[in-house]
Structure formats: C-alpha cells, structure tokens
Length: 389
Image 1 (cartoon, rainbow, N blue to C red):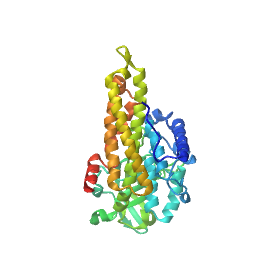
Image 2: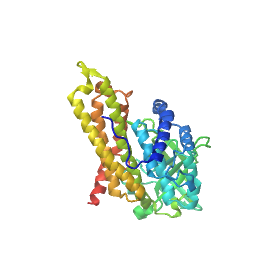
Image 3: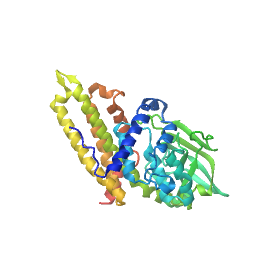
Image 4: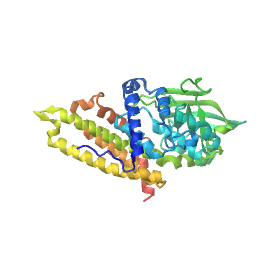
C-alpha cells in the first residue's frame, strides 16, 4: 500500500514549497551524497545554493533576511531530506542556531548574523557537548574569563554538527564557575571558516572530522579554543549567566526536528523496501508474496500512520505556540525509538543486501541510531516526560 503523504498542516503554497525543496535535494544533494560521505562534509557551495533558493532560515522574519514562514517550512525541508536518506546537510542545526539569535540575541546580533545565515554565507553550529559532559550540561568545563573589553575563551568541544564548515559557532561555556547553571553563558565565535573566508580565528582550531557509525557525510567535529579573544558584544543576549535558560527555551524546537525527521525517514525506507520486495524473487515468487513480508509491512505502515498523526499535531502546536517541553520530548522519544525498530524490520526484508551500503535502507539504518542519543538521549526524554506526569 502507498502511504498518504499529505500533511494535515499543509496548503497549496506549502505544497509548492515542498516541490522546490524536493528539486533541490534531488539535484544538489542526492548526486553528491556518496562523494560527501567519502570526504565527510557537503561543502560550502551547497549552503550558498540553498540560501539563493530561499531554503535557509525559512521561519526567520523577513526583516532579518529570513523567509518569513514558520516551522512548517522547516519541517518540509527536513522531511524531503530524511525520505531520501540525506543526513549530511544539517540544515536543522543551522536553523536552531538562527533561532538562538532570534529568540535571545540583541538587536545588533540579529542584524549582524541572521541575514548571513539566511544567505548561506555563514554555516551555523552550536557547541554544547564536551569530552566529559554530554547530557549533563551543568558539567561543562569550557570557560570564558572576563578581560578588558571582552572575554578569553578556553576549552574543547566534541560531536559538533557542522563543526568543520561552521562560520559561526555558539559556544556554551562558564562565565562564572561558582554559580553552577546560573554561571553558564553562550558566546558567539566567528571562525573564519566559510567560502572565501580568511581562515581560522586566532586560538580557534577544528580537530578531526569524527569517524561515525552513520551520517558519514555530516561534518561532526572536535573544536578547540585556546585564549580566543572575544569582545563584549560576543555574549549572546548581552547579559552573562543566561545560557542555561536560553538552552532550555529552545529544546522543544530542536526535538521536534528529530521527531519529524524520524517519521519521514520511516516513510522513505518503507517505500524503498516495498519496491525491493516486489522485484526480489525467492523460491519461485516475489518476496512481497510471502505472508511474513505482508505482515511486517502491515505493521510498519500502521506505525508510520500513527506516528504521522501525532507528529502532524505537534507541528500544528509549535506553529500555534502551544507545544510544551514534555510533548516535544514525547515526539523525540517515540520517533527515534520507533524509527530504530522499523528500519531494523525493513532492513531484514532485504536479506543479505540489507547489509550493503549501496542500499538506501542500509545507510538509513546506520544514520538512525544516533537519533536516540543526540538532542537528549531517550533516557533523558523519559525523565523530562515523567516530571510532567
């Protein structure tokens, strides 16, 4: 059975926007995906192309160079990438960075950075995780000491999406280690790493692009800061000690991206598997003719249909401004966990070919494993949800 891909939140304008996004993914990302997996990044040119087409910062107000849309536009782009197994172009992280500027930046910071992010002139990253601090953000050790006219930033970060290509990084650090969470701030670091850029900012260094199980085309990197001198206006929002509040306020937005991508990824894998089992023959019939195949596909189609209804509701809520942290955490938890189970079932239907990277479902399977880890682990999601019960 073919899946119903019509979204409850869509309309004719969004359908047209989806066509634009799909054409961009098919023409700019899919043909280069294998090469991007080999080199570990998608390159700067594709970001500039996306900016030219209006596919970056689509839910940022037009006064700051954005598209003037809402989360539905962002969800559309995420879905078109996820359905094709495109994981290297981390546009969602870029959008998350833009929202930190929009929601927490000073007016000067918004004017300075948002138009450049919307044009793809700068790629955005946010540096939270450290070698010794993952889900426990209060355990971070990167620190920024006040000096005349600004700060000196020292520390290291790891698992940073867009880390290699990023032209601007939001760095979570301690500006007063004695105050715990209240001593956490976010500092803006321009790296100099963009198309035609002058090179690394003094004291800033990008480490290796990390060798991951999946998401091979995504430039997940280590970042190092050694006496990086920053001016006072590099403090996001202009007031120290607001970092933890800023981080908590934007988590529902981030987690819904993961849930939306999970359901769309399941849809793409289902469609690819359906085509495969209808062609592949065994014991004188197609794999699709076996009762086990029919039952497995029936289960998967049902899970996708249920997930689509829930995720569409969450999209409607975030557009209306009513999506709460617990519900967003449910979307992330259910989406990531179900995606893992569904892709395992679909890979199994490919038999030995399911272990070959040339097949979409195989790459999706490896890419999906981290969904249960980043953006807050499944265990953290359960903790957040339980507090709301």
